[in-house]
Length: 124
Image 1: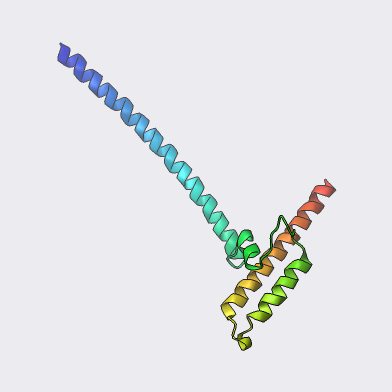
Image 2: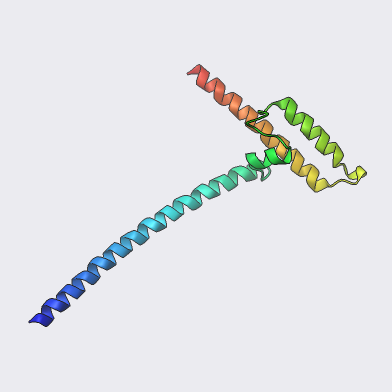
C-alpha cells in the first residue's frame, strides 16, 4: 500500500514539474521572439539610413547632440570639412567619404523628423 502512495506522489510531482517547465519555456520563447523582432526593426531602420544609427552618425561627424545640439549649419560645416579632407585626389578614402555622407543624411533626416513631430504636437 505504501508503494502505491509513493508512486502516485512521484508521478503527480513529475506531472506538475513538467507542466511548469513547459509553461516557463513558452514564456521565455515568446520574450525572445519579441526581442529579436525589436532588434530586426532597429536594423531595418538603420539600413534605411545608410546603415548608420543616430549615435554613430554623431560620432562620425564629431557632434554632440546634448552639447552642440543638432543644427543644419553645424552638420554642413563638419560634413564639408571631412568630405574635402577625405577627397580621393588628396589621398583620402572613398569609404570614409561615404560614411561622412550617410552620417550627414542621417542627421539631417533626424532634424526634419523632429521638426515635423514638433509641428504635429503644436497643431493638436
